[in-house]
Image 1 (cartoon, rainbow, N blue to C red):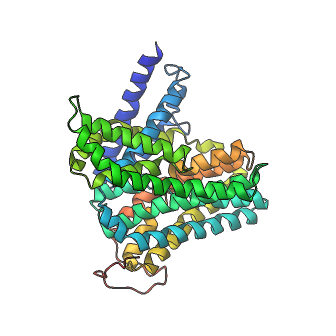
Image 2: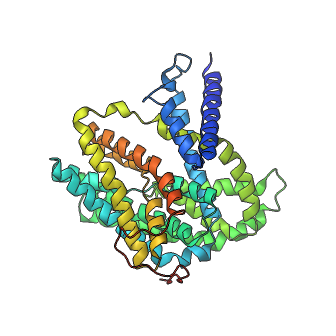
Image 3: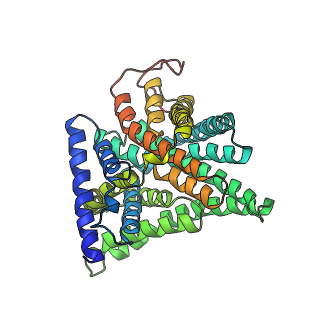
Length: 412
């Protein structure tokens, strides 16, 4: 059987099972995301291990699924940005900023202290702290879309905070990695910051200034789907430059592309065209791919206690940190908890950071196994807690005073 035929069969299995899992989850009153994730775990090395079946022996299959999964999260974040009004994101500025700052600081301290308590050295402990600062908001964005809350005050705060969280967390990671290399001097750190800030400023300026003009010319082109093609090129271009120039995650560039195109007169056309293929193919592959890359058996008995503690810390510090940040910025008690629940998932971001630490010999493979456990647990609980938070009354557990539901968000 050729590699192409193997890929066709594998996609048939993965997309089909993901859709069935999502449908079953929806029938049980849960977000479809949860069903797709559990379907991935079922097919992954923890149980069925479909990628090692004799019929799927092509060495290129795993990398191909990985690349399609990466494209899925990139276009998912583009769609999320496309459906957010720019003025709504600006109005969420203060809340997003405070949420992101405390959503990085408190999880970092929680991870650092937990690692130190289990006997890790200072450098590995710092890295574990950095691991817990990561946020993968893709699952929350999908859940909010299903709940019809993406454009709510919570939704805009969550997405804005996720972008800032990504910037702050990766900036800290870049600085940390620079200090661990032979040329990690002060100027290296300064240059890292300059590139990061410079990319965001230049990309936003050029996008605001030239994208509308370019769109007007593109619409006059005599070719098939000129607007859709242009939008795809913008997404891929900003995702690429975010990684290579700005030292940011590609999803940040994709989200920015969505924001830039969200206030154009072709937004609805782009949304309809890209969403159809993305939700039919790429998004199911992305969600089920998380499970395919998760091997629960990689955790040894000695690591289980730390894995449990780290999962608890990962969940609790995001709820408390992000919740307090949102509360300080003016959101009420219930909204603060909703924001905190939406920022729990580490997803692929945590795995990428962990892989970087192993490759640079900062931490060993045991830490990667712990990260897998944290990623799996936080990914699975995020849609459950997020949906639950929209159905329950405000909780007093953060010891914060309740405020009226109609309180106006302060603009910062």
